[in-house]
Length: 217
Image (cartoon, rainbow, N blue to C red; front, side, top):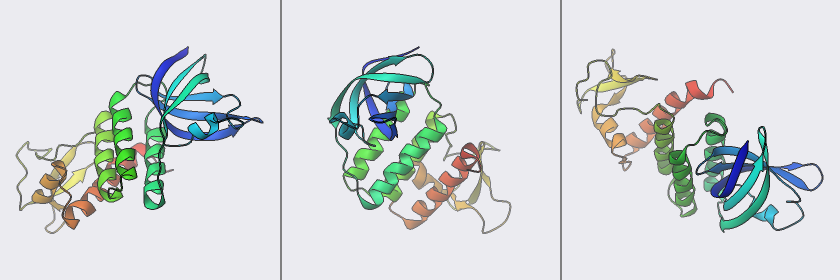
């Protein structure tokens, strides 16, 4: 049985349900991702509160995969536009696809709230998304070590190039010119994204790491 009592939650998605209600996907601090039916949400102000990226205090209960929302208070209204809005939907989609329902993940809740706040503040999506993706992978148990060779355990050398083996880590590139320089990996590991090389490499690494988890869809 699902029972949520006045818990901090982030709205991921909302879609119409029957004539006046909505099915809302929430990421909660203590219960992970849950789906709730918000009765009459399309007829009252709760419908505005339950828009994607808003933060609420939610209460609900029910058996099976779908609970009934019994209480909701808006705590933070999100204002995202343009690239930041598209990035927000990307964050919500990643969480929805990769985090199973009813699996507590307070670290992912914190990371999702953080990245949406930074997007709202106008920070560059190409930087904050890379930080979020890395934290998401770590919380899911697929974090990468940006300091050591996954095969030898030796510290990465700044001038040597390395390739990623998803699920394992970085190893010395077998072919000259391929891979990413150790110095760039060190920047990514320290979340230093001032250089274009770090930003480009971080995006490629995130895609390589996420692809096996997301599947062909």
